[in-house]
Every structure is written in C-alpha cells, then in structure tokens.
Image 1 (cartoon, rainbow, N blue to C red):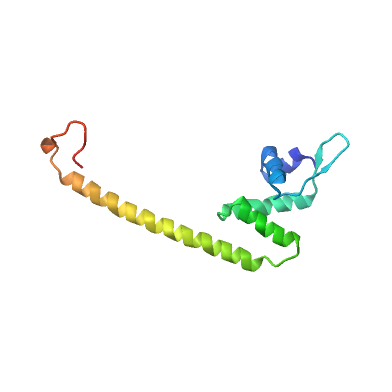
Image 2: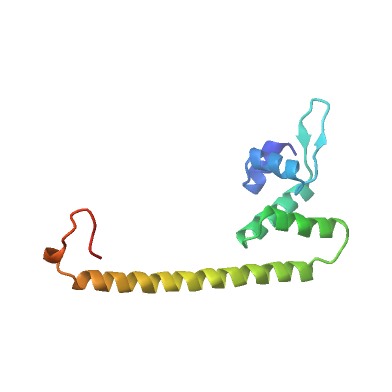
Length: 128
C-alpha cells in the first residue's frame, strides 16, 4: 500500500509515517520505480504498536528500544514491564505533586476569602 493508504488505515499522518521511517521506528519502505513508498501490512501493525505504546506514555526512543529488541528476536516483556513501571512511578510522583499543589491552592483561597479588601494597602498587588 502507498503512504496515503497506510495513513488512512492507521489514522497517522503521512508526515508522521515519514518521520517514523526517518528515526528508525518504522523500517524504510520499499520504493517503486517512480519513487513512491510501498508498505506491507506489517507496517500498519507496527504503527498500531507505536500508537499503543505512546498512549501508555512511552517516548519514541523507548519504543525504538523495544522494537530493536523485537527485531533481533530478543525477549521484550521484561523491558516493557520495567518501562511501564517507571512511567507509573512518574505518574504517581506527578499526582502527589498535584495533590500538594491543590492543597496549597486551597489554603491560599481560604486565606484570601478571610481577608478584608478594604485593608489592602498596595494598589498594584493583591494582599493574598
């Protein structure tokens, strides 16, 4: 299939497909005599994997490492699990940071509601 067909089938733009080829997450397509790229169904499967991995928070570099292992018939499960666990830990850290930020915002809002605007002596800065 040509790049437009692959783009339509996978929901990924032709530009993204060319980028995937350029960085190596998608093997180079065969070229017809007119220079057009020709892809097989394996390319669609690989793009589907890339999309799934990205939706799980993986970077293209992390995806490339997994695909390299797979392309060399190396086991990938341990690497994938470790990568996903690392991402989960990062999400947990971000959630904890957001909870602390939320608590701080709640405190500031409560303090601001208790202040009397008439006592504000700086016209350029809120007393909160």
